[in-house]
Image (cartoon, rainbow, N blue to C red; front, side, top):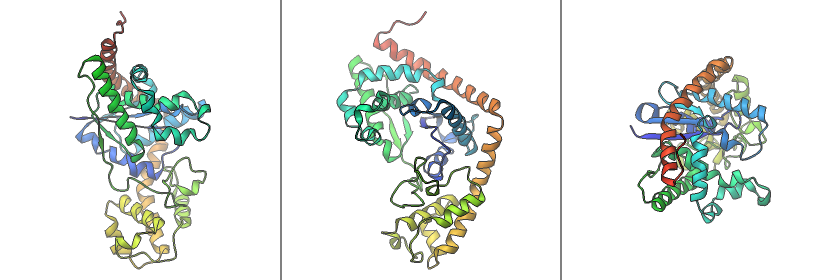
Length: 333
């Protein structure tokens, strides 16, 4: 089967946006692709992390992925830093990538802000590590959102330059996998902004660990407008908060936004929000319960992750070693 790779940072409890926009879409890939997924703790330290918090959040994210449906028996699931091929290949790619390419990366500009001279070099070369993450497995498909497309293009530039410079046809071309319905879930407080774990207001997001009362409170407080829901999608234009809530209900119930509007068109947001609360609670409670069970036995969880790292290492290490041989590194005897 075609090999697919994706990773997610351990930057707090996953949100509903992470789940609907990425994680849930990974689950069916386990049956259609050779699937490799990891918690990218190396990427996380491109900005300073409290060590104890990083360790806790890394385990928490791994538990969330399993609770959401990633089966360690059907996919390869591991912690990025446990497979050293990522950093070995990343150094080679640091030497292949050009400064001009990295200077064009908009994410560095956004994250570094105005004081770029104070930013860590890891944040600058982050895209080279991302390229290594994918290419050390010779993965050819990567599920990406709009914010990562530029990095995927850079990964292909690095692979092509490596192949050209060394006269080989070693690294394959990577293709993006387009995300499914509700790939972009917006903030509950501002329908023009993406739902984010980094938003200062916890009221802006639904966390996968939120209980019934918390979900109900957040949805009831979610920003809306005074108009009733329309009967057709055209009526959601210029109504970002209404469009967001309709999209969430459609995604969580496995239907289309048009069908949601057929059922709820003409109604006010009061009754609609109660329907949304019921759907979210029914869907997310089993995930939250399973996360708690996994985190209550960290030894068993870590054992599953070690097995995943062993499987990942078996794929990545030979590919990385061949890249080192192509470069001219002497093999370790």
